[in-house]
Length: 62
Image (cartoon, rainbow, N blue to C red; front, side):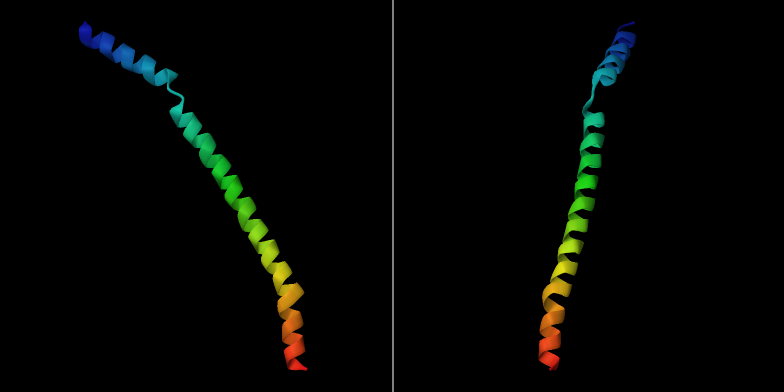
């Protein structure tokens, strides 16, 4: 009978544990942030390429 109480107590403790849900939420947030950072780096890189590199290349070819 004591073992049954331990199993029920463990099941109740696991049911109330929200740490897995929190970890999943943080993972989703981190995923969105990484996508936003990658997009920003890409756009900044394109701006540098168009704004500076091509002008310098054109000046050197003259």
